Image (cartoon, rainbow, N blue to C red; front, side, top):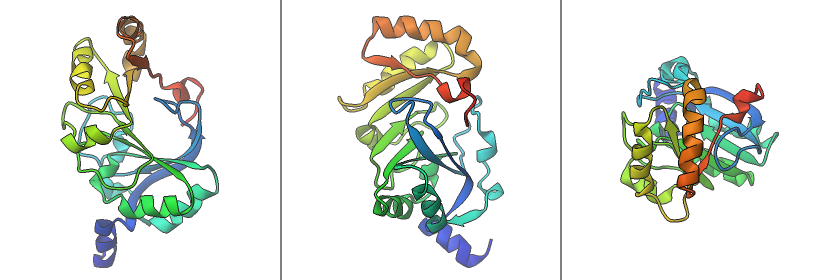
Length: 209
């Protein structure tokens, strides 16, 4: 990689952009809202059930100037969701500052495996077993979204819920390939433990990205 480009990536003024698209937020607290998604390449968390494994190798995704990304986002929605990959692999300060300068609401979806950077209006923390979140991210999380793949994940969910703040919204979401098996169990669990809510990947049900 060109030395100048590498420096810009390190600073966060260029980022490995996998894709950007306007859609409906399908998961969690903001389900059903229009949002512009910015998917950043690069992730070494390595979830075996990840549905965007093509995002893992940052080298496959061209470093892109954040100014261009911000201009694109500002044309579509007042809400932007930065996702990945794992966006906190990179310095998110320049991107979020530029988005907020346009008056946009800026959300992140993160595993919390890296130190928190960026100025966020909403932080969705979705912990993964392979690389646990940094302690600092728990305190800042607005939403905790636990993916339920098997029965043990309910206990694991409670361990993480004990670490977030009292105002953090708690969601249990079935892993997509296990949705028929786990959704009824999640429903029973939520009725027995009403501090939790169910999150479904509604965008997949209605055929949106």
